[in-house]
Image 1 (cartoon, rainbow, N blue to C red):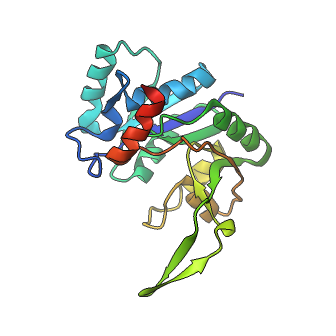
Image 2: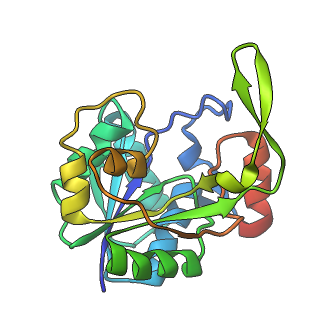
Length: 219
């Protein structure tokens, strides 16, 4: 079953300390964003790939495409003020009944993770990859902290898959700061969220340390 994937690439790289947004930093001779797009193309060469970019970086991206002779077909949508706005813009051109939303700086999502998500969303209407916590955790309570049961928590990754109508309805909710990802918005709209195992190396590249980890897999 084919799907549309919205790849968000609106970061400006503050925590990376880079002169260019982190999605354009090269690893193994290619910008991170190209590695990410390739993950979905390898899984399904017919999937609809939609890329959200800040308007001021669109020409730079087109120059990178020429430089690297990157020929995977994708549609560029101008990003909005918030990630929320960018995805809402992209939803207007989705062509499939299933839509995935993925961080542009997660170039290490595995083919197995995409497969698990696609299978689960077909059954339940939603699917997000998660990992169990390995380390002990503590909850901040005022000026103190208290121990919490790690078995009660999961870390969340992308791609997050949803039926198109479900995600479209969720984006009728006005933006507010408590929206941390698409799953939280869909849940707020009254839908249940189904989870499946992600893959550990599917990190979001945010800091120079993350970049070093990614290089061990992509170089």
